[in-house]
Image (cartoon, rainbow, N blue to C red):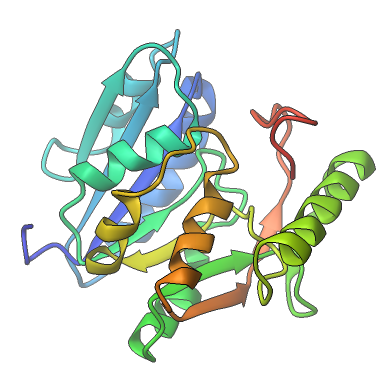
Length: 223
């Protein structure tokens, strides 16, 4: 690991060329204001457009690196490839649409400095700020899914599926060596294994805004 790199931002993406052109400039502006070393890792999950090429429009090769493969394997697989390529002390996972804005990162990382191993964004806490909700049936399915997780697998986390997650690399590597799920439900497997290892998880209220054209398929991957 390059010890000089504090933050690795891992973005899984599938056919997100247009959306990334809208979101990456804001990410670049935020990172340019920080006083720590950072890198962006864009994982192109078998896209049919120029998703992987967009990174070079906004970041130098030293700032941003791409991981590309075919065929499409799913978000969980993409995140695993990003973790394997990351050099930062802290890893941040975020979706390409930045439903949770990058400006929420300081809110999560402060919990790592307080002794937590993982900090996850949440749309479901009283202090969460959901600017624009999903369609009622998507949100309803998500709530049912998370209720089932709490009843059948583990308690203590209300929203397992928010894509904004932050953890220390030293804690992430042993977990990701054991992950097997390739789809959006990888989040549950990650948190389940973290709970089994006794890791401290902070669920943090964040600002979140729904964006159209979600890659999540109802009844296969929820919320």
